[in-house]
Image (tube, rainbow, N blue to C red; front, top):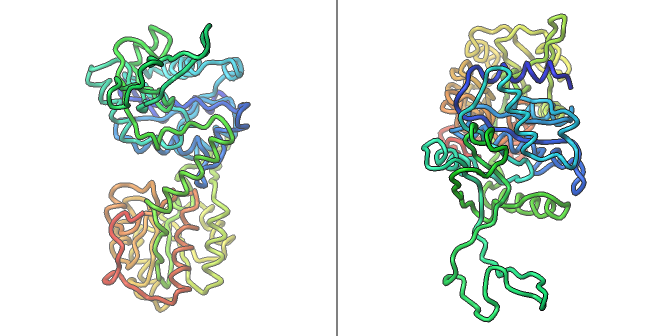
Amino acid sequence: MSHELATTRTTQSVASSGGVCAVIPARGGSKGVPRKNLRMLGGEPLVARAVRTLQACTSVGSVFVSTDDAEIAAVASRAGARVVERPAGLSGDEASSESALEHALDHLASHGVVPDVTVFVQATSPFIRASDVDRAVALVRSGECDVAFSVVRADLHLWRHGPDGPEGVNHRSSVRQRRQDREPEHAETGAFYVMRTSGFREHGHRFFGRLRLVEVDPGDAIEIDTEHDLALAELVHARRESVLNPRPSAIPARGVVTDFDGVHTADRVVVDQFGTESVEVNRSDGMGVARLRRAGIPFLILSSETNPVVTARAAKLGVDAVTGCDDKLRVLTEWADQHGLDLADIAFLGNDVNDTACLRSVGWPVVVADAHPDARAASHIVLRRHGGDGAVRELADRVLAGHEAGSRRGPATSTEGHHDD
């Protein structure tokens, strides 16, 4: 991982000072859970989950990941964060989170960027809610406090070993008070800390000035420090998926059309020193397309880009492709006619404003999880996966489920509402 690369990512993402920046320290080494920032939860690396949560915050402008590890840097970049390369001297077991945060802020300042508010987030707290972070940012930005951090109510009777045996820490051992009769106490979760940047720079630690507690749901307060913690988090995630996010409904489309950039890819390119562009695709998407082909479901990649990588990828998948397209709806309609399909029978997967005409015209308008708001507004179905992160496979599985069930349900009888997942 080169310092030049990290610098480029930083300057591309933030153009001026002020506002709110988030920093996720994520070093490669870890004793309790090896490579824990890259461990998977719900099919997603922990560091990517943290980036996604912060991107969902209405108050956070830019997200940075401070790391010494090339693999973490790549995952963070694909998730949409900007990477700050952390030196080895700040990446050992004895290095503090404050030192990583100070280094990241130094790096931003060297490019003329000084955020008013800094959000410090731990990737090992996988159930952070964007709304809780936004609450904390609002407290700091309003001037109500200098630091706001996440806590949970802790109704515990604590004990310690004293010279005469066990003794109560936060209670008198001779009086057993009921929970409702005790003064409320809170435990720090370690999930997030929102700080006035100038105050942190002045004091060098995260607790300075006026402090405020941001109480979060105890169910969101799991912190992964051991393999047992990770196993518990997996159980919690699986339970939430089954209760809060039931199995996505089938999409009985007879044809599938997708955009390319931002759908098959994460909408980013890598440019080498000769100006040659390359993109990263998801193997799982390829398997989904292959299964659609075997089921006899026509598939088209429809792109406004002229990059030959689109044609090359389509050839690899064995599907049709049209590139350099200025009128996607016209081409989509012609392709549907060639395959004897009504637009009502087509699932179109897009991600940006130039997909809205097609989305509004087909029977099954679908967008990736990180789609532009205009594209989301034109769609009935929002996938759980982001572009380049298995979105095509997710759509393929739902179309195949509809195909295998033998159902044929158009938009008039659809039970799906906007943003169903």
